[in-house]
Image (cartoon, rainbow, N blue to C red; front, side, top):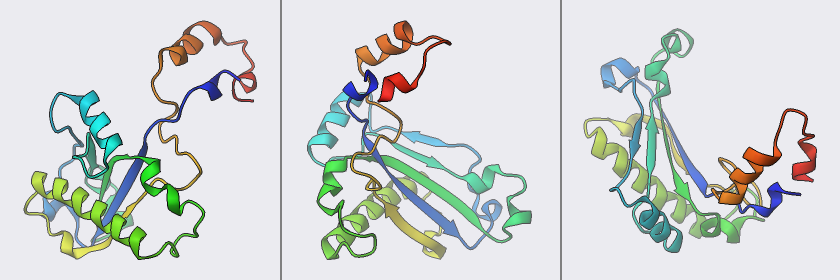
Length: 178
């Protein structure tokens, strides 16, 4: 199978925050933030792959409730924030066979560490934000399956060769993944 030759992409942490106040008085933006430490993206990715304690190579922050004109009619008095950042599966691999909620103190400590790091990025952009009012402040690591492929296979030249040369409207796509 052609696509199985690709290696998985990096996984992602998802941090979802629900706040018991509407977005407007909190002055949540109606835009997204894509935050990079600098212009050396490949080097930053490599450093993060080597050590998860390195600065995040990218952080994406979104404010879904602020952008949704019908949010307050459906969920009055609330607002939401989503933060996404890369996370290597290997960082969480030792817990992959343990049930959710029963992974132990080390796992909880690592999640808390990621939570604080993600919140630090949020506070840097929005220092006035009262996240202490949040109902849910927990990072969710990429451990849903044996190998995460959050956004598909990792970029590789042969992947684009497959896409550009071998794929056409008449192709049976099941051949590519089996």
